[in-house]
Image (cartoon, rainbow, N blue to C red):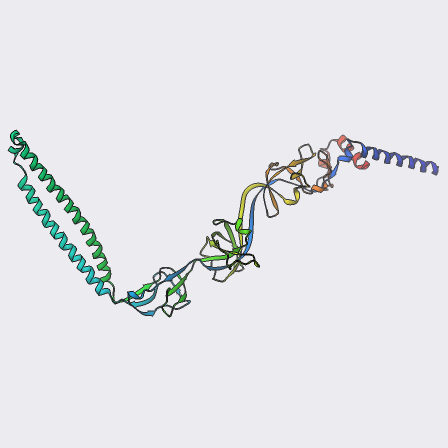
Length: 409
C-alpha cells in the first residue's frame, strides 16, 4: 500500500513539474508574463526649481562719498566720527566760505546791468511807438487812388517798426528770465553765513573719515543690506542678472527673497594659471527691513530655472537603459505598458515630464520589477482590502483562475 502511494506521489510530482515547465516555455504563457509589483503611485503636478547653492556675506548696498573742495573755503571741523549712525540731513562737517561776499557783489552787478539794459530797450520801444503813430497815413490817403504809391511806402515803414517792437519785446523777455535766475542765486547766497555746514544725503553708517582732508573726506555706508558672493567660471554661464534667489541665515527661521543685482565681468583676483577664477556677484534683498548686520554669513540659493504646476516624477521612476527615457504604467486594463517620455528640467530629485504622461496615470515605482511590456502583474495581499464585503464583489471564475495560476507558479 505504501509503495502505491509513493508511486502515485512520484507520478503527481512529475505531472506538476511538467505542467509548470510547459507553461513557462509556452510563448504566450500567462505565467511567463506576470511581474511582481509592490509599489505604484499617481502622476502629480509639482513645482520644480533648479538652483545653485552658494555661501555669501552681508554688506552695504551703497557707499556714498562726500567731497570737500578747498577753493570753496577753509575747513573748520568734523561733526561725526567713524562708526556713527547718520540720517539724511545729519551735519557731517563745517567749513568757512571766504568768497560769499565777493560772489554776491558780482551777481548784484550783473543784475543791475540787466536792469539798465531792460530800461534802455523799453525807452527804445516807446520811441518806436511814437514813430509808428507819425507815419500812419490818414484815411483820405488810403482811398485816394492817385496816391497809391505813397500809401504803399508808408505801410512798409509801419511794418518795419512793428517788427522792431516785437524783437525788442522778445529781448526784454530773455533778459527778465536771466535776471530772475541771478536774483534767485543772490537770494541763496544771502541766506548763507560764512560758516557752511555740509549734510548727509543718505541714511547709513560713517565708514571712513579722511583726517588729512583728502577726498572723499567722508564715506558713508548705506543702511540697505546686500549679499556678496561669487561664481565659478561654469556658474557664470548659468546665472544672469535679475534671477531670483533665496537667502538663508542662522539668525532667523524663514528665508529672504532677493534677486541677482550685479555680476562682475572681472574676477575678484588677478587671473592665474594655477587657480580657477571666481567672479563677484551682488544679491539685492527684496525685504530691506530684515535685521541683517554687515558681516553676517548666509547661504544663497540662486534659482536658475523654475517651472510651476507641471507633471513630475522622482528620478528613480524613469528608466533609460540605453533607450529613450520611459516609465512603466499600469493602464486601465490592468496591464503593464511602456511609455516613452520627453523630459524637461531635473531638480530636487524630480524629472519634469513634458510629454508621454497625463495627470493621474498610475506609475510603477520600481522599474526593475517589470519583466516585459503588456504583461499583467501580481502584488502582495493587503489585509485591509481583503474582507468579506469586498470578496462578494469579485467574479468567482476569475478567483479560481488566479488561484490556479498562483499555485502553478
